[in-house]
Amino acid sequence: MKAAASTWSGGPAARRGRRPGTPARRGLVAALAVTQTVGYGVLYYAFAVVLRPISEDLGVSVTAVTGALTAAVLVTAAAAIPVGRWLDRRGGHGLMTAGSILGAVALVAWSQVVTVSQLYAVFVAIGVASAMVLYQPAFAILVAVLDPARRANALLAVTLVAGFASSVFFPLTGVLVDRHGWRGAVLTLAVTYAATAIPLHALALRHTGPSGADDAPRSRRSGAGAGLAFRDPGFWLLTMGFVLQGAAVATIGVHLVSYLVTLGHPPALAATVAGLLGVLSVTGRVLYTGLARQLPLTVVTAVVFALQAAAIGALPLVGRSTTGAIGCVAGFGLGFGVATIARATILAERYGSHRYATVAGALATPATVAKAAAPLGTAALAAAAGYTTVTVAAAVACLAAAGLLVVLRPVGNVAP
Image (tube, rainbow, N blue to C red; front, side, top):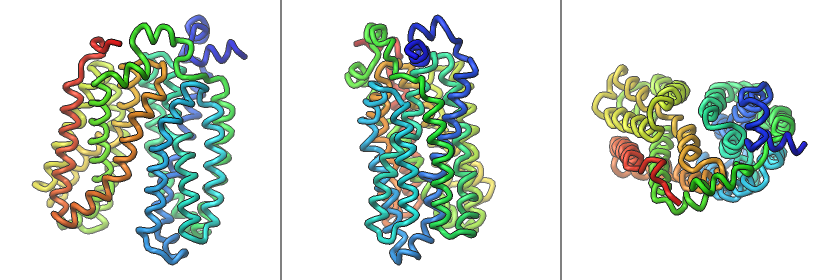
């Protein structure tokens, strides 16, 4: 068993033994692709479908119910750093398995709430579970298991499949609500999540180890790890860049339909055009991974963010036509899901696998807070100055994010 653990953690046994493309490792990637898809679909996207039914059932405003999801996102952000430290010290097997159990129990409890306070308590638990089972720990495991040449493809595979979570779980949850009501729908989703995530995490991750534990001496000599990252000004430039772009993406994701309607498009068309964001996010991830094989990761990411700035900045100018609106949304959508994979690959390349999860958690915390807070702040901005101002602000944020990535020193210049 010790030999197996050493193999999976990417240490000496991995270099002597199993090749990175073995069926066992492909099975790990496949298992994480499934659990991320179901996890995001059930723990995050399903909420939008049951939002109004919950509001009507509990007799409270939609805003009050929406606050529960905001609370969950903020709890996930707060848990990112301790989760990262756990991953670096003990690995992801126990953490993700326990998180799956917590998530399933919280979903069952969600289906039984009768007050807003109970709903918020449940979503605090869902926020903790999300920190334990979604992208951050999944990526940390892949970074620990795979050599650098294989990471990009593995991360792409997981995010490509998980990119369809909303496409699957929006309609699935809608059908379940129609047939069983919102409580029956959530209970069914709880069973679905438990039946997939718990066994897959328990079995597929059982030989994974801490992030780069076996490579710690080498990583420290080469300047990798959390200590270097936090002393490197480039880490804080990266953090600010991803915070700005994440805030812009969250803002557009929430307010795009409303803005398209104010530009004169029928609501149904506005919703259809906005739906391109999810579809093109998958395309963008494929293009990003292909370009990243030829160009520096930060350069490719900066170009994508700049494209987003140009696309959404042009929306007030050309968005009144259907063609113009589609073109702008398509351009912005190409970068809609890129930050997820870019953040993981840039951090792994820049700082190595040693203490990767702690570094990633430190960056994820402010980025997740921005994701939760930006739509609320920009809603107030829209009320005061209009949606055009919000769109221009999102464009400026994406352009600033691109600029921050451009001024980063090359990886080779990062010194301990």
